[in-house]
Length: 365
Image (cartoon, rainbow, N blue to C red; front, top):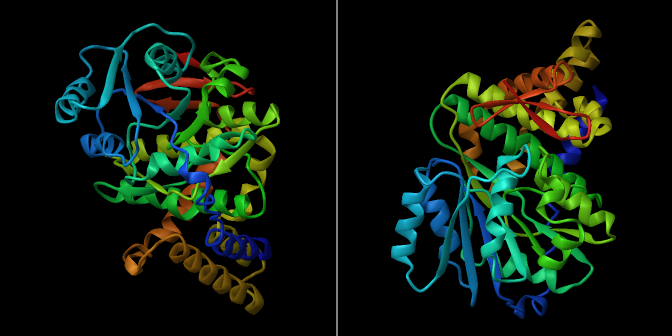
């Protein structure tokens, strides 16, 4: 139980002090950039998310959108943006060729033939960014010792309780854990919300083909660049992603996919995650201790530390409205963490896959 208290306090403190802004002098460099946006279907606030990348206060940039099917509804949104920003270099690739078990990475491989510039920024389709996003994430790449730049993200719930629960998983558990690790020096991460890198670095690791079968394609990009002796930079830009889970089944499948992704890339770290699920672990310890006074006190301290973490991960006092989510989210995440050991199957965009020990995925019938 003591470990749960320490973990909750460490995460609450660590997630507040991780930001290390890039020096202003470095940010004056504005090389031409190609943004790669692989698309598949439309999501909540889809137009607003894509538009935030078009409306950047940056001198020269190109955006390459990619779909596998010309009938994909995302195409209509891209055409709308092309009409709205006629002076921007907005290109669309429609290409169904498959280069591995990851359809997203196959999309990226197909899109690269239209990429004009040597500075590349990858971002998922459901991400919304501020106007200075490109300027801030590209700047660290001026240092030849930097391999990739990645951004932390914040979930925004759309819809009912299932969206709120998954948002709590992102905002109150996953990202604070990452930021705490970063505060203590770890850089073993990379997020699809934003990854920036130079073309020469991508080619040095074998291009996108090197991750064509990987579930955690974003994590592997960071891992492969670090193997080349290059650093991963965690940007001071926090981007936003929309969460819309229509049912309990969708929410559970999504959370299980994330947890099994962590297990695939860091199996030892995954096994030790139980200490980060504050209330369930503390309650179990209290039960085993027979409800003794000291155990009850430690359970209360764990709860207080968990609430502190909840508010530390938010900008405003609006976190009061979601306090009821905390014990439910912690109990659910703890149960799914345990279930993550039972099977290696995941659901991803209406398809089932099996995750191999090396992190690669193979589709199941």
